[in-house]
Length: 376
Image 1 (cartoon, helix red, strand yellow):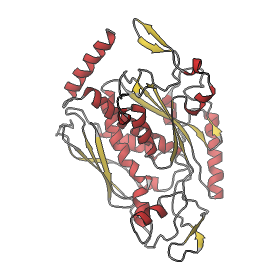
Image 2 (cartoon, one colour):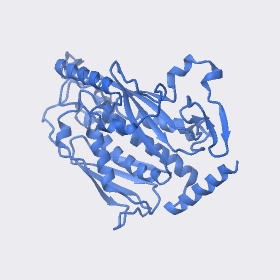
Image 3 (cartoon, one colour):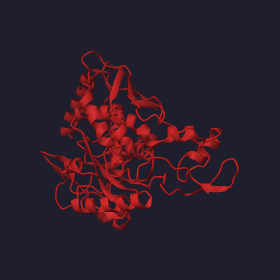
Image 4 (cartoon, one colour):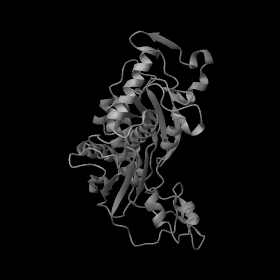
């Protein structure tokens, strides 16, 4: 089993992560991890803080001098450079944020430390942990991709189900908004410019794809073992996410049952396969060998340049929510965090299926399973 914890505040000294369950002898590539952190910083509409933070990981334990894991927990650190917190009381909670519920729940005099921990800044550490899981999954041919399919009402013509040809997901890494459709990207940039000018924020939708996932991750035996259950929980844990769709998602309701379910075929070379993938690679809580397809909807961010109405915590009088430096649109950045959360969820189910204290043992178990599948 894989588990992790994070600690730290948005403007604190550092973010800390503990990752347990990665087998020994996995080569850790710090350059790859730092590149993933750089990808998380990108995206048109991000705040000026992205120019401040360098976001580089320091691995404190769990690896040897040759950067191979030892089987012990990995302790991870990211230093915060943007540490300044205005010395004011945050008494005007922002609608849509954790401020009010958090300060009441934890009996705090203001929202300062609620917003500090609830901040999406914490996802920098989750991106680090996800990068390590990506390194692990790549040992077994599993890859994860993402791209933005909408910003506000600007829809990309490129997506997993509606595109007429194979998608080159690498194009997204060369886009300022991680959109493959260049025409939609241009319209979305104009929409963000309008939001910047008028002081509001924008949400959007992303598509996450996992390829090379073998049959049999997850289980139908108990509710908490289902792969789609684990993925949905991990995705909903990302700040700002309001819906998770697996496969065709809500659109599947428009199809008749004799078309909505993916028919099964067999080929001596390919083995069992589907010609469609409306289920998004998961049936009965288990991966079925097809691509894992996830879609996430992110709401517009709560902090507005033109603040919304709220109530002063002490006086109970109507006022305006406090405002601070914030992103106008963080959908592109969120897609990288979502990649990491999918990598974590898949790694957890993968290790549950194939286990192993060392990478060699896990690979042996995986190879034996592949040979078994080939004979089915």
